[in-house]
Length: 66
Image 1 (tube, rainbow, N blue to C red):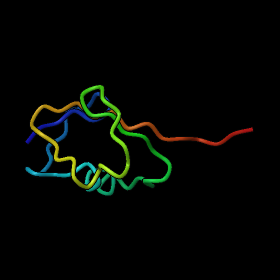
Image 2: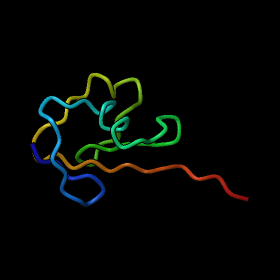
Image 3: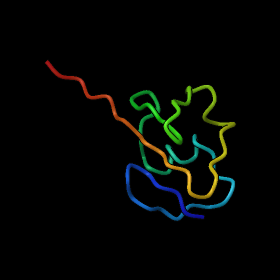
Image 4: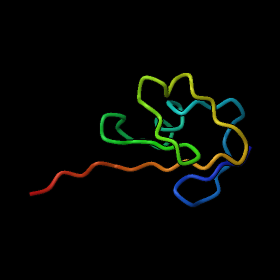
């Protein structure tokens, strides 16, 4: 199925969870925030959030600085 991740179309397996998507992108779950269809999804809900065709996902990575 197709979803949009940070503005780019991606083919992903059906029934992919948000947790699995973050893992497949090689991201550290402790350093990102994720929105699905403009709605922030809490980390505890990632494993139970199943992505649907044409969902729009925005992943924001936290970067430290000084």
